[in-house]
Amino acid sequence: MDKKLKVWLKAHDACESDIKRLLALHIMNMQDVYNKACPEDLIWVITRKGVLTQRQCVQFALFCMQQIKNELTDERSKAVIPALEDWLNGTVSQKKMKKNQ
Image 1 (cartoon, rainbow, N blue to C red):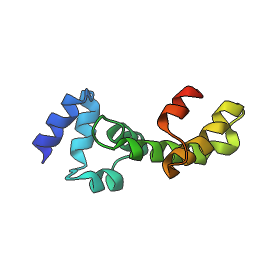
Image 2 (image 1 turned 90 degrees about the horizontal axis):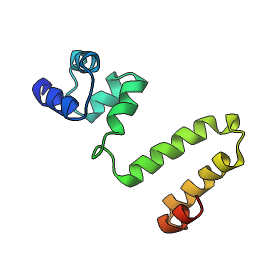
Image 3 (image 1 turned 45 degrees about the horizontal axis):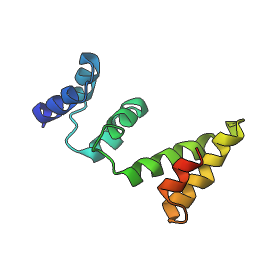
Image 4 (image 1 turned 90 degrees about the vertical axis):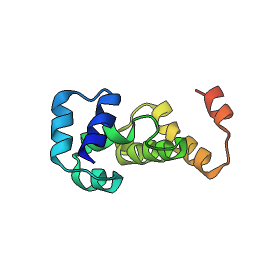
């Protein structure tokens, strides 16, 4: 798996130090990434194109926003949370969300 992982990391423009660090973790699958990688590496991996679906990316963005919502001072930033919840619940279309940006 290390060879496949190395090829994948290089294809996604990982730097040599990141490749070395991730290979040292002996990652065999995504569960290993979740269990073994540091938060920065986990975020980097899951935000690579094709790793998560659009819906999973939105769920992740919502989770991140919810973690810092008490720190947000801009009302537009605060409005993102219910908008993402509405989109995930199917009560607002992606087209409408783009229109309101």
